Image (tube, rainbow, N blue to C red; front, side, top):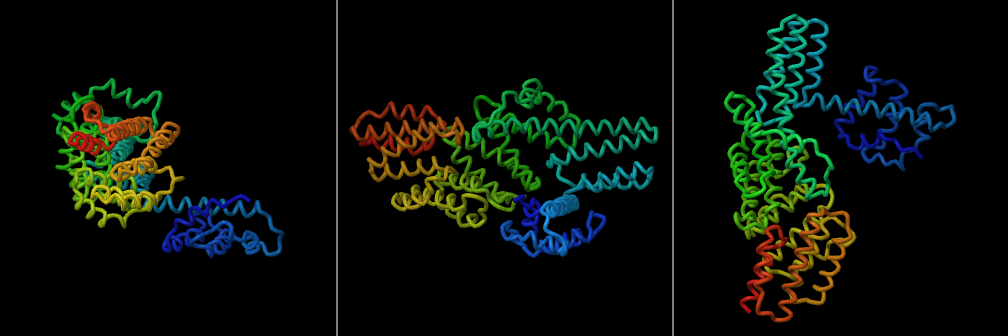
Length: 487
């Protein structure tokens, strides 16, 4: 049976939204009618679950047409009309929210088209003042200001004022060009994340190709002399671009980090959160480097994010499990166990979405390993559902560490082999992570063999680990090498 698409929207409604939507359905302005309202009056009885299997369609039909034979096509048609009204309602509700401005822009356009010039000037000027109060780091507002300048340009053309048209066009270019350049520069970071984390890449990335042909660092020197009000927006994106495009060294990381640390408090939280995510991803890219120590750097970044109040996603109002794992791992890898435990107590209750239980088990296992409580760590690790692919490899890596520490060699050897087979065959992890995992398995297996053979020479293993800055659990592997050397 054809499902009602509208119930997916209705399930998301709060009690207040249900009351508001009731008024929408009654209104002819929104396409409401008596028979649609009767349908809605019956359908809303299934709130809040709106379970499809419990919705009695024949009862809904009878409420509309008590003397007619049931016709599923008629019910689907009415449900479709209600769905359109629900979409219009949530669209208007979003447009009326505090940060949306499209209704006011459309009002300005209508005033101009009706030749109500003074009212248009007042409305457009009010929009300009509203934008002036918004943080200069909110780069999305550049595009909105760009669109507003089109209306000023059209207004000047309507009134045959070429001087004003030119003035507005210059602003139109300023806002639009810096916005689109910012998007291009952000693509450098996005491209790395997509490739290294999600295993996504394009044969031709137009943004990357364009950046290869534009000298934005020279351009920054030029506009930096113009006292351009949105220069900080351009600058933060340029620093992020340089950080990800640099082939050697970490100078650009420190430039970007210092800029965010100095200016993050002035940014809207959702913007600050956005820029910090890319700073964190860079630290993760190099988190096994010892010069500088990116375990410590990442911990500092997490501390600053906490200070700025952006650990919780400002828009979703939750902590995404992956971000929680990153923050916990950062403190643990930096050997800041007490700080990790405080972070866990403060934010574990804010987790939402899929894999929450798995996330908590993983972080507790990691904490217990860091404390040397290997049996307790295994207890948390064994709670992981083996059929759940999310975080499967990371759980296996933690289990290998625990088994190694507990000298449970038979289990250890079997797990190395099965994990190697899994990472080679699955398509659900990135090629970069796949290779990093294989390199870890090779290194930990060599340590196991050296320990079993009571080898006195582990220099070669140590050198291999030192040479690979991206090796998973690099610090732990180096410690185990030193332990073997001392024996």
